[in-house]
Image (tube, rainbow, N blue to C red):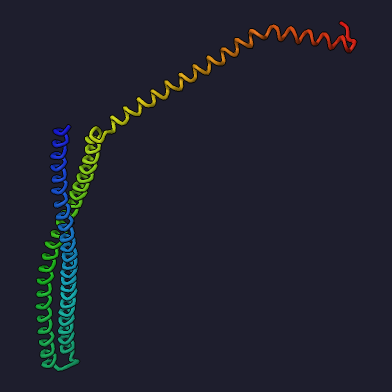
Length: 235
């Protein structure tokens, strides 16, 4: 038994060590998940900002292209009025030239906005991919964390059960049960013995009553006849 207890203690120590080794990865995984979630929040915030800049650049580009088109239309109207004689031709040419300059400036701004839009959309696409990777990694780590926690639960329960099983004999539980069985057997035998004695006593009383029963019945019959004769009852 001493050897078995010693072996059990060694195994118990190794089991506790295994559980402790599992607890560290759990804490590390939980910390890693917290870090990843923070990174995910930052990435989502950054992605939203980049997409907002892309949208703003697209809106600016559309606005600049609209203005460029308007300046071109104004230049056309000025030349048409000068052609009809509604205004001085030199003045119309000057103003139309200014309008075309404005058109060129807005077209340049529209081109710049388009370049920025493309750059922001490219950055947003890369960030979106990073966000998807982070989400996938978080999901994977969450599954691994569940597995680790389940392993710890199973290991702890197994250690407890094995410990109880290993300590059954050493705690004297089996010998105690055997003593209880022996005591109950003695009590049952004693009860049976008293029962036999009681039955024996009852049998003797029954035999005595049976032996006396005949004379008792005869005397009762004679007494009945005497009572009837006294009352004048005749058969």
